[in-house]
Length: 432
Image (tube, rainbow, N blue to C red; front, side, top):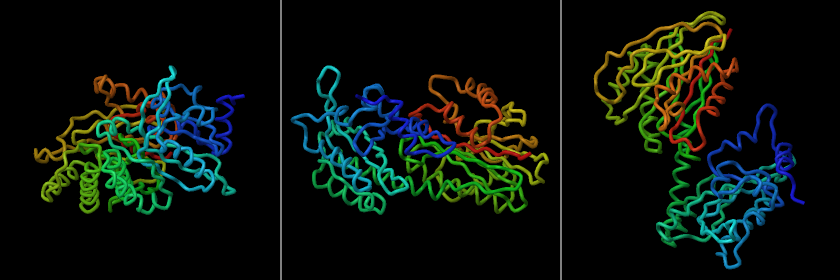
């Protein structure tokens, strides 16, 4: 008898759980197609991205053996069998494996076979006793890329040491060069870009500081699945006079090149802000002059806010300026939210000169300041003005949740799976 889907997911919840975190919701929200498979190759769960990729409902996938869901053709490419062999090997060894571009056809409801090409990764999840409890199976469909070049490679398994330390590049590149395949070159480029993206993210998007009387939370969601950097950024630092400065910005682009330009500009804004002690408008003017003088070619929007020093439980001064960016939101202690409306100043990089303007407000104990990039609200099928008008109402509807939870709920509520733009968020909460 086939186990019920809820029973399979219940097993997964027991095997992989942390108090207070709904890991099934986390898994379902991932934009890359993934399965959770038991060591016996029973499918325990499938996220929405995977179900869309194979065009099947959860009832046709979850609770069944992998080979019942994805049977092998009798005349299939030998590389297809490598997928099952890799899953069995990962369950036995506990070592991550990546399989290079390989053919694994899918059988449709009418019994016909659909030619499909994949890059797959099998990641073991080990329990406290050192045993593999489940395997996370990621399957990236590269069919269109392969068909465009009509080249492909047999499956190549790469263990976790190679994937972590670097030889995976040489392995995949050697395989690609030997066969001259479009899909092989794609795999090599994919591995290189992911590694560069992760390294850039680690070095650029640093954690916020700890400031007495304030709580600062940050979030970043990339536009491109599995590539964790782009043109958006956040930052927070304390100036010498005790003012806390928070920044969000958006450099045009979503790739590693955009991340590089973003990193340079973020560094300029951070350095100028700390060394000069300038207010938001003067900081943005000076940062633009510095970037231009250094030859940094970066067109960007940015919002800078400074929160004054003070004792816990006391109101804090708020000064802010926007260079072509979206207006901040303040959620009051009673849970109601409002936009901070003011005239927008020119984007960074346009060369229109300085004279940007500071705007002031007050943050009471219990208030939360929210800065965000346009990926949170901008949609192709809706005017931006309507989305901005609705944002305070969405924040108010989330009630008086903690700032970190507020950011998570906003991402879940407003950002659809497979969104085409990055999102950076910063919340500054004045403690009561």
